[in-house]
Image (cartoon, rainbow, N blue to C red; front, side):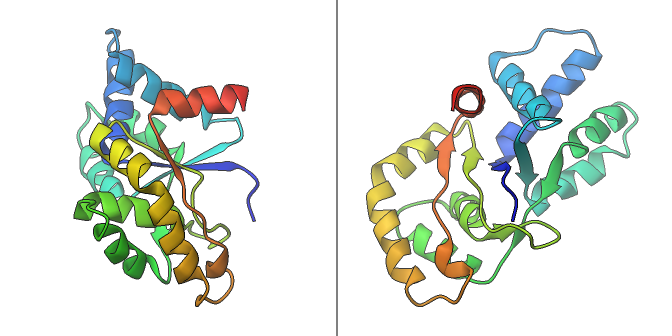
Length: 183
């Protein structure tokens, strides 16, 4: 199992990373969100963090890499991220998260963060979800105790290693960067 910190980027953070890389390549200034997203991306290059994206993000990257303007930017981004794969119980957990008022897309991201793995199936779950979606962050924060209890009940009936899954922290990229720098 991997000892590296694992972080799932939602589509907005992935987009801000790509936009930031493009702006850097063109010599333009970055927005604050782009700066933090790119900072998180670069830290994954050699530090103790692995970044993951969804299959939807990978599909967008494949379309963008055919455009010459984005080719180098997509290649730089793709070198630092991996595609997260859903595991057993992912759909069940996503359905249960929807009961807490999360949108289908947010429940999908959150469920992948607990019941997701890498290509080699060497990990289970993420430590963080990086997002700029403030309603998601707020909803997660308000519901976290109830969600944790629901997951604990569900885990009782799961086979190893699924009985060990945990909830991620849902944070903005700058909070993850600060957490990683200071612990």
